[in-house]
Amino acid sequence: MNEYNIIKIKNHPELICRAAEWFHHKWHIPAEEYRKSMEESLQSGTSVPQWYLVVEDSRIIGGAGVIENDFHKRKDLTPNVCALYVEEDCRCRGIAGELLRFMCNDMREKGIDTLYLITDHTSFYERYGWEYLCMVEEDEGGMTRMYIHNGKE
Image (cartoon, rainbow, N blue to C red; front, side, top):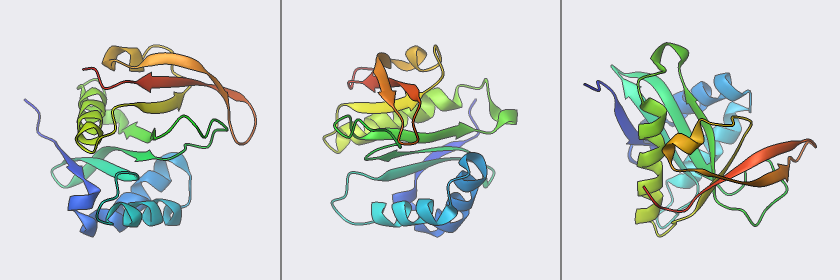
């Protein structure tokens, strides 16, 4: 039985500062950047960006966002799932898969059927209906894998 909840930051703005710090510690992007994006998600009528947390007993154990571009040069492949992370001691419980499904369903409700993400993982996302699309150049140089999810479960 799952003891965690997946929540939308948009519905819990009181968690923005805490969430921004949590993401900062996982990905080393300035907390201010996360905070600004999360505050932008509060605007009415805004589909992107969106941010999601997985909370268990008031502890953030996972999270991810949907943003326009996740630091790559293919600006036409948008929006992007970003910053997906589940705490190491909480892995292998299906949390990432549930979070991905939740996000895809939420975006579909907002009229966005196709999502993209970049990753170096070669088999993880396929389990959840994502398909390898192509290699893309990162903003800082180097190449990474681009995946697509077209709204199918």
